[in-house]
Amino acid sequence: MCLGIPGKVVAVNQDENWAVIESFGVQKKVSIALVDEEVAPGDYLMVHTGYALGKIDLKEAESSLKLWEEILFAKQPS
Image (cartoon, rainbow, N blue to C red; front, top):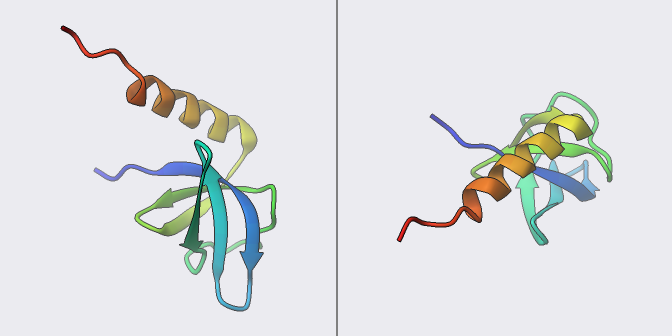
């Protein structure tokens, strides 16, 4: 099983095949070598271990981010 995290593209370098994405207020440089579409700032990418796997639409990104927030901020049973 692999877990992907969506991120909003804030910068792109097409010549070097990388983009900077932002998720939960954290920015990270990721490879876009596996993405077969043009990537531009404002796009959303699904990322796994530093590699963007593909573009996703805003609705899918929001849904996935909401699930991550529920997991990350869930209260632990005491």
